[in-house]
Length: 240
Image (cartoon, rainbow, N blue to C red):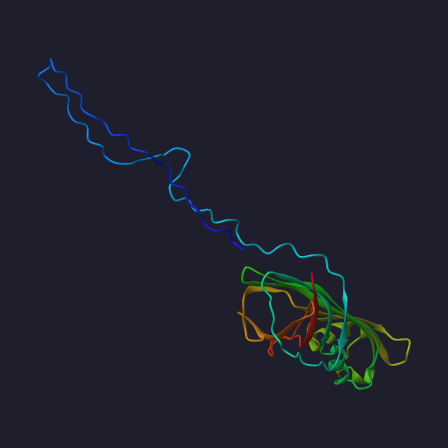
């Protein structure tokens, strides 16, 4: 809460001045007229307002990685809640499965060693929402050569093609020990970082770029994402 403004006014009391006349002098002293109160211009300053410290978002705490479930996600049951003046650390999430984008193009592809995490924080201070969070998904995939385009493409070149098919993906591929196949290690990064003014309207958070449902309950914040966001899903954070 911002401190109330205060003001001090120091007013020196006026002293009446009197004319003095000598009985033996025929010339009278001029009368001095009191011009009213005298304002002290020293240490006390008239109407100085203390506006207090500027509102700032505190430094975000260190955040550990939480698990991400890939695939079909349950929609957020929006219930609203108090957000201003709070900091949250992401503890879990559910997002679209990036491996599905590859297997839909190559049903014979074999996916293994899938691991997905979310790390970051979400803060609401001074009417601003500051989110610094990322998701990272790693998996291995073996592509049979039958899935590779008709143009001659070496396994070493396949990683670049994966990046063009899956947003945020980078891949490294080598000749597989399995005949007529490529073994690839794929990393997919999802960026949730943004900062800007926000307002709560009903059970939704509205910023300049997105609108999403949210629910604060028992020290946990659950929120969705804007329908137009590249990374779909639901996200869970714990209050600091």
